[in-house]
Length: 260
Image (cartoon, rainbow, N blue to C red):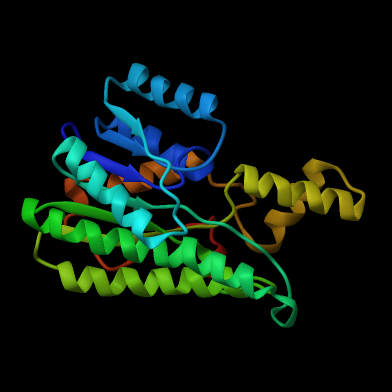
């Protein structure tokens, strides 16, 4: 479906981003991976994707907290592959605290990586996509782009901003062959969520299983985690011909969280 297309997925060395990379590779796209982690592990992931899916995969360690580095990632991809078809803005960080205790440096970092990085990537990618008359921009937002939770001021603000940015870019590129949409995951079993489960278990003196059930019961009516592979499948759908007229909107993958 995506043979000959080139995709960048930011924050793709683990978790949701890696799930997206693998699904796009399964559909035939060449990939640019990005993110932090052990150099050897990242290289093993890159080689595995090439071997398993017969696509090209490269790694770029651009720092998503720096706008010029994000724009450089786009330019380097176009220079290397001669095109850019899909941009998935997935990189993100989290920190929780009551608003009056929220460190200003954490606020700045979260907005920089979760929101500003997407702006810089989109601004640099849109001219190339317009020239090709085809492009897919997918922003990985969150249920927290649609609703709020306590102690997550920066994350909720950034993800709401990402949904707003998605709408603007969808309008500005409408009819050009380029689409821009946001995917809003609920609880997904990633290393970040595993840590939250561990923290709950430790604080309450309960098992990991009980802690995960408690986490889900509070928000996610399905009482099941979404998987990185399911998020990857959603992104792949948005890159398909069936989604040509889907733009400027959000798709929730949240087990009913935002239906309440």
